[in-house]
Length: 179
Image 1 (cartoon, one colour):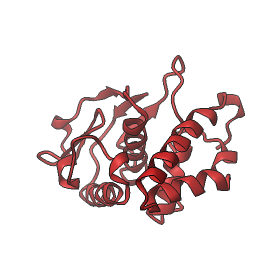
Image 2 (cartoon, helix red, strand yellow):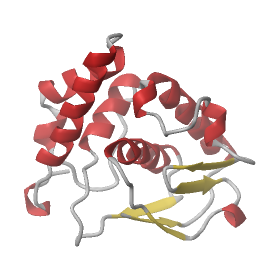
Image 3 (spheres, one colour):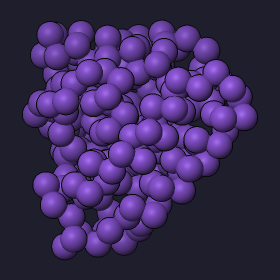
Image 4 (cartoon, one colour):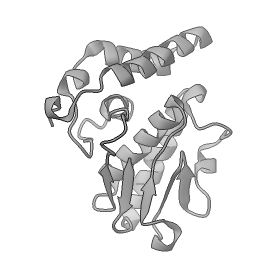
């Protein structure tokens, strides 16, 4: 996935974004947060979000104009896609996100469902077409909700395995996707 930074976000957009990132961090179970980060404030260094291979700031000098996202594992990918969805929606005009058509990448569907449900922001949209069947599949939402709300560590691990599996199963060719 390639991310092109076009312009810095406004002050209001940056504040909304940083508050949403902080909320996402605390809403996610610890097993889905970036490794070695214990506090939401650790995601930011000198007013720069620097996590999951993504570097985003309100200051243009702190960002590379093009960043290629290559996530090592499903946890990092899920968190990175959550961040990209937040940037896309809360900092309009700041980024363009394009998928590399040569590699199979997980979709926007599950992170979008998670954000809409847990942040109570049904208006959030993906930067590209999504599979509407996934967005309306109750089983996907159920696992995403139970993953966050489960207090049983074994259940968390189970729901994460199901989420990771579904993320890859629901990949569909572009022509089958609808916006």
